[in-house]
Image 1: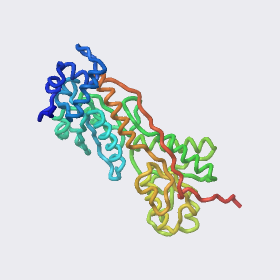
Image 2: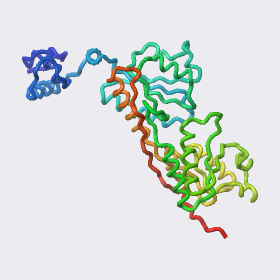
Image 3: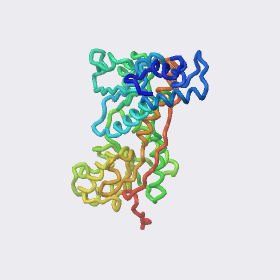
Image 4: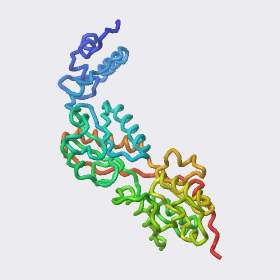
Length: 349
């Protein structure tokens, strides 16, 4: 039998001497008004594969009462946002595997004003949205997302429901414990300055503090540029002996870019990692393993987070309730121990 130019369900039905309803049920694997045997399902699917049948996206969406479209919204992405690319790649892959397309939207400060909302959110029909926010909670943004009247899934931010995020607290606790077990005692937590740290930084700080308290060690939290460390360090100048005494033995940095920034400052001050100071990061970005001294860090499964967010979104879409709630998903992180924390600690004299 020659393949027709335009293969539809009706064409398949005529070729197999079946009703269109039976062919539709066989292809989409649902129970309808027609009884379809396992043998008939195989016949239908074999011919559909041989003729390279592709279902019409609009018809499929109408049948499922969805638009087969999930939004991926980045909100005020930071300059060092390589992780958003990894999350989005997981979102696009998982969406395609489940028959959904993805509408990508990037929003910056001020775009939560109703007059400046991106066109995609005003005109494109979405079944759900996966939102990757940066920074602390934004009331205007929450109002905007609520006005969309669709399920919203947060990714890379901690919420009790409808969220997918890494175990920031546990990962930071494990990294700090690694330093303690390696013999370090004077350990500081270093983060970029912020008037209101986001929940990621707060969770990583909490993990560090928990590990320090568990061993009876005093936590020491420092933001970049503060006077808690000598000004010569921030100025990338050599330190005096007295200034060196102000330095901790090791730093737990809130992220890899902060750790690599610290690398540069220490080297400019004639200090070496890990001989003089040990450093750890968080995230396992593309530079962590290829820096001058490979960085001990926590590997965050960003792609898996994107895929998990799609699974949550599809589950919520299936409930046909924009206010439906699903328990948050917290993904484990893996510690990557490398040279930056490997200095042997000599006993005090």
